[in-house]
Structures are given as C-alpha cells and as structure tokens.
Length: 120
Image (cartoon, rainbow, N blue to C red; front, side, top):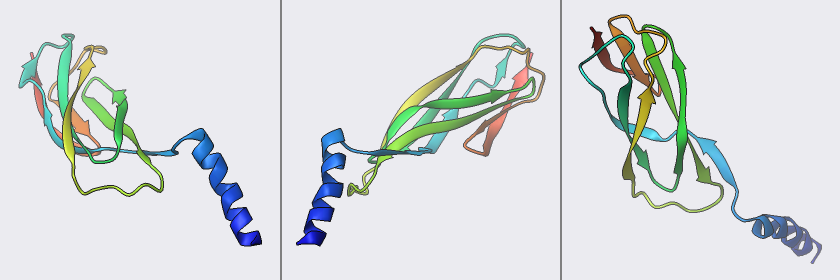
C-alpha cells in the first residue's frame, strides 16, 4: 500500500503540470542555400528538419566572416511512446550578412559541412 501511495504522489505533480519536455537537436534531412552571394547581402539558408514526436524550437547560430554554424534546437516529450513516423518540416534561417563574408563561405548545420558559398 505504501509503495502505491509513493507512486501516486510522484505521478500527480507530473500530470498536474502537463507533460515534461527534454531538449534535443532535431535531425537534418537537407540544407539549401544560394551558390553565390555578395559579401554583405542577406542570405536565406533553408533547413529541412525531421521531426517525430519532437518539436522544432529554432536555431542556435555562430557566425564568422568565413563560416555560418547552425545547430537545430528542439524538444521531445519525456516518458511518452513515440511512433517511428518522421515528418519533415522546412525552416529558414536568415543570415544578415554581417560581418561581411569572405570566400569560400562555409555552411555547417548540426556539425556537418553542407557546402560552400561563393562570395562576390
């Protein structure tokens, strides 16, 4: 009886507050960007992320003159069964063009080099 009370006491706060989410990094299926761009021109990087039971929460970005490094941010439900179905969603990161780019300009997403952009 005591074990049941403890289990119930632990479960109540979880159900009362809703589901708990844990951070994760959604997988990347594809990355698209222009073949060339001017040094200070805005540039869109289109990232196709694979989401199963998770959500996409945005990008973390680090930028130098020669490289854009993006990391996808998301979350998944803790303790909830998930089907193997993955849905792809397309997200766009707008790089403002500052600092001015130098070529070849690298685009890295989730640790993978997806290519280089010619800087005009």
